[in-house]
Length: 168
Length: 168
Image (cartoon, rainbow over all chains, first blue to last red):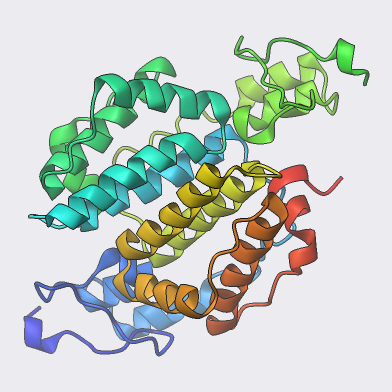
């Protein structure tokens, strides 16, 4: 699909969002709209999927998250933050990221997880010099936790596929 | 269940975590362990559930999150952070929270969502004077987004049930 043929609006009438390189932005669009923008599905297919999508996804009466749901949610946010971090961040952006990680390690709402993360930071200072550095640093921090939980490690050379570009 | 009869270890052998009031901590334990600790299920039931739990939850080859998954994940973290924020925070804790929210509004990995959040903050300064204040402030910020998306508003008087204590 040629860039100048990218659609302007998604299935719900929402304006489609493209990043600075003119590519559709994953974390700024719904999955259906992203697939529409990349030409993976047609507008008709997108509309059909939208109508079939369960509308009853009201989670207002859910119970609070447990440690696993909280962990998944938090890693989703952190890796995604890395995926949008500037390739060449300014001094201010680097300082913001250091402060963010530092405060995160103090306020993370599972006390023993937060203490583990503070210990990790103490011996593995956050690397905020570039998107690549930060993405790998988060990936390695996550692997440290995976290892503690007896889970497989993720190949950090692939972090951009998992959290930024997708697999195809 | 009497406090002194609370179990010490969960289904996987993990030590159960209790908060400063001696109550089982939701965001520090798995759901099964939390239910075990609160006496909602027996050790036998917990073990059966654990065995039946799908072990094939490997998400290493998932695609990056879309705007909806990112939003759900981020609100889960933010509301949970409020649920663990001190009832009477120190000056330093209040400053940390202000900085955290401010940096969050700059680095949130959906650019138009981040801009909306910065606009919200500009006219609704974060309230960090107590857990109650912060919890309601996040709830109201979330409702502003719910309203824009045509979703029902959440009754912010119930935020602690949804994000801290549960419904029963």
